Image 1: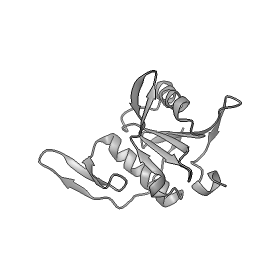
Image 2: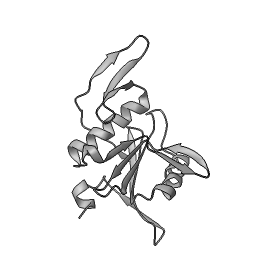
Image 3: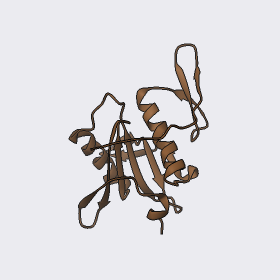
Image 4: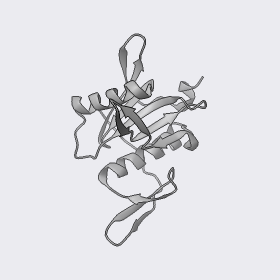
Length: 151
C-alpha cells in the first residue's frame, strides 16, 4: 500500500439548499460533494494534469453489464480508439481498500478489459497491470503516464 499523495487541484465548491456541490470538469456540471466524489475528482485531475490523460478520453460512471446486471464504473480512461486503458475504483476515505474491493474491480474488469487497474480511497492506492492472456497481475508503484501506455 502506498500513500496517494494527490496534488491539490483548482476546484469550485458551492452550496445548494442542503448539499455542497463540486464542479465536475468531465460532466460539466455541479455534482453532490460526497467523500467518494472528492476522491474521484482528485483522481480525474491527477490523471489529466500529472499523468497526461486527455480529458476527452476520461469517462465517469460508464455503464456496463455483468452477470445480466447493469453496473457502473467510477472512472475509465480510454485510448485514442476508444478502448479501455485504465479502470479506476474510488472509495470514500473511510472505506479501506480490502480484498473485497479488489475483487469488485477485477470482476468489473473482466467485462471492461482494461490493462490497468487503480483502486483508491484517497489515502492509499493500489495500481496494477493486468495481462489477460497470461492471467497475471503486476503491481505498479504509480499510474503509468498516458504516453507510456499508447505507444
